[in-house]
Image (cartoon, rainbow, N blue to C red; front, side, top):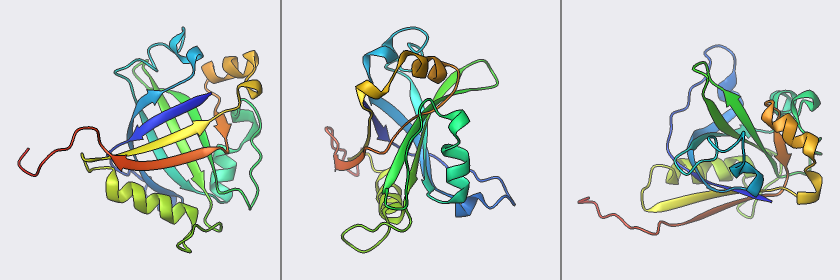
Length: 185
């Protein structure tokens, strides 16, 4: 089972005085490009409709992210994250004040594991997203792969109730958009 999102622009909002600027990186809106079949059924149909958007954010892996994202009570099924884990992705359904529901994608990335250039996974993905999320000629695709056997009926019930689905199988792909715009457009 795979979820795929096109990461796009957005603003970073941080609660002042709470130190969130040390926890969160880039964030924004996302278009849902691919989702498992169960997402097209009720009660998910409106959340995963073709016109629906999601919000996304990158988190630095640390105590705050572990406390907030890896809290067992808020997960459908436990996700094992160690110091050697490059990252973990989480999908949840947020209920907004006006009775609407919004899909939220949180990606927790290591600040100790490095990529080929020697920077941390968090810094690398954050740099990529910051540079390309507002570029109409570039697509940033985030894929979260969940093992189909790991998702049980009661996990889906938990997802409906607002718990997070999580995985450590993540991919980030940057490629040219199918439609290219010129500076005159």
